[in-house]
Length: 405
Image (tube, rainbow, N blue to C red; front, side, top):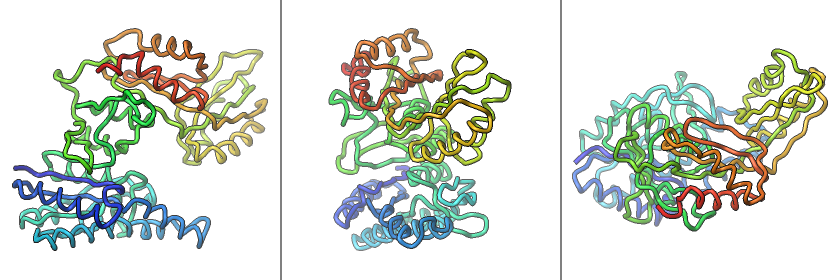
């Protein structure tokens, strides 16, 4: 017996039949003697459909009203699941984000959770109710409905699990765990039984789509065990937990691939103190996140500065940098959307030498040119031409022995 938070993604609640399957899984957990809180996403495709409807009214809808609109997707699935459970004679009650006291800042469309007043949820649990909560949403200090951005239901689930001090937060999705790489790219990818929070954070930030990065941050901060598993099988998935001595001592645990970035190169930048700030501050002021940054060695009083931005922000970032180039007297600005970021990740890298050498040697053997490099204590990332991305993933997966786990 325990308190279990279960989160189901859009593909898991895509239609009424799948909602009924979710109800069976939830009721099974409940009949085993557990207290159960369920967090739901909108049905697959619903959020995109709502965005499309709004775009027919305005190219730039008011963000506050967009949040009111988008929150209806999760409201629908929460009500339908509660109805289904009640029809099966299980006591259930749905709550919207504000009713569950999910308190956020006022950044409409990408709000951050500030606090969760779990009182009402606990009252319903004490009455032996299955509590069904609309994920992805909250409420700011002025009572406005807010949404947490793409993947926000994961964040809702882990934050609520933390507030309730749940025994585990189960994230149900269309994959059955965390793999050494994307199985759609590499047929030899293998499911990991356990992954450390830090590894999962790196994987999420570097392109793995299994968990939303803010949900992993919450899990690590509040030590919430997260179980990633499939909605469609009973198999055990992957536990995301604190690093411990029992964890597999792999030098590299996974290979990630992101095709969501673009590269901008500002050439002929004057070699002067503060010039990098002049290049990058306007990008920051526009709310565009910069990832990798490289500055070349000075030559003839100038150097080049290259950096990556989300591909969705590429056009806006190029317009900014073309203006900046004129202001600072740079030679020109070049952009490239045809790139991919390939990364190797593993807490074992802290105590193993030669990871970078193996990565570079492997890519060189496939005649893949490296355009940018960044590192941390537990990851190394390389930017390459996009058309070589899948070859790079498969080659690195083999080179680091992940085919044979």
